Image 1: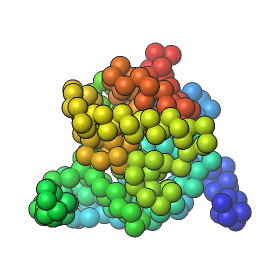
Image 2: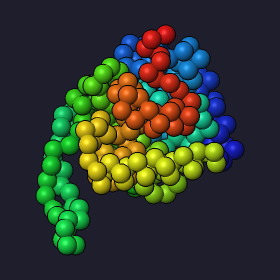
Image 3: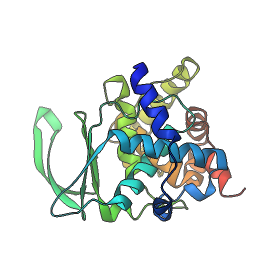
Image 4: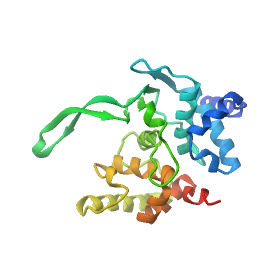
Length: 248
């Protein structure tokens, strides 16, 4: 990391968290369950995130401090307990007021490229942008069956830190072999479909990772029940046990 950038981030994180922003943390459902030290760390990461990323409203949406803090707070959950580059490829967060329509192109059978439009709650681009629908952001939860679109889209940005979205974030050496086993599990689920909370992530390894991380932070109980080894691996990576937090 650039020493000047590290110094700037450390300075931002040390600044007092504005009192008027505290009510917005209700939009970060996991926050009340975190230990005090993790809460303090997360507040610092929110300051650091907002000091580096730009927000833009789309389709007439007006971005205010509540929007910025809630998005930054949920995204910064992925930064806890690790030396981080603050999603280095990300420059701008674009927020729509509600679900929006976007065009897509994806490969189909026999090499045919499928094109069309679909309704989306969010998307993550390799070249500097995350797009979110505000009504979907507000639906984030920490309970059985809950979802978190911010965590999902920023998991893609975490995956991108090594330059490619392929379901493998930058890993410490001790997790590289276990992670390969996780991708084998993904391939097994693809080849032999069965009911699983990861069903929405079976499109490709990048989606598998994003859905798994979303479940880890929004509905860890389902992930732990159906895929305990994957849950433990993500717990080692994030150095967190969300399923145990609600019980403490």
